[in-house]
Image (cartoon, rainbow over all chains, first blue to last red; front, side, top):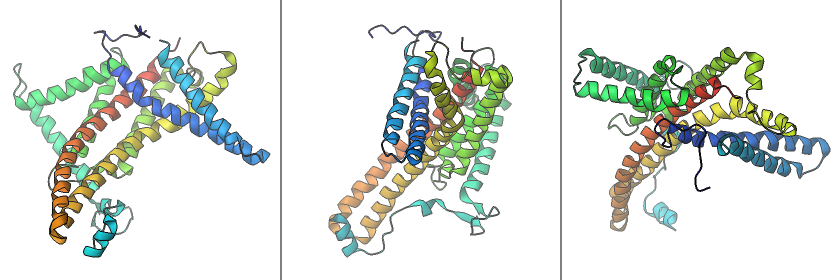
Length: 76
Length: 264
């Protein structure tokens, strides 16, 4: 944690607009996760007559979005 | 309590709402032929920007004059700070006309929100951000499909190196992100910031006017406070308006850069 080494450092070695722009685009990933997998859960709930799959879907969607964000931007 | 007091002392204060954004000038219904204030303002902004850029570039010299300095500063900021950094030195120049136009158009229309007598942020009508986000959307997907081919573009949605079992889920997530939530968040962020900011100014200004003019001496103090807040929020709005124009352009460049980048 102390010395994060970015794989794509900007020319001057500072935190350029790339990091800033990526931070602004995270909302989109989180929303996508919640909508997609929450929606799938809701559909499955309707189909199977249950009521808890929407919650599982929302949690899984948020988790998956966080995982993807970590994988894309955190591990570089 | 305060609501009761207000209601008891002075009838007839209508809090600002979404009706304050509906300003027909010619015609009065919601048909396509009604000329509205934001429609006039966006045309005015085009004229102003064209005038500014022509004036800034007419007498170009090595030692720039004031206008040239401002014009070149704005262009250089977008080109070096956004275009080159986010799209890459190889491809960014052909997107510069679009990025710079977007930035100037959004900036001027946002600033309209606090310019006296104009005082209406055009982007607070959702149609305008939708049109701009639509241009971004079509551009970055077209660029991606052209660069990687139809199948290749979809293949490239998923970053390499993921465990195999998670790939379908990530693909779904990336697909929804790139095709649905990106244009949605891009347009909503600009619209909501301008809409909420303008509404906030209306609340403080109309509230101050009402309390100072129509209500008793006790509430005149509150009216003064409200007027002071209106001034503070106007400066805050200036910050938000510039920032939102910057973020919109920044994300457009990021999306184009992402569509062009090869994932290996």
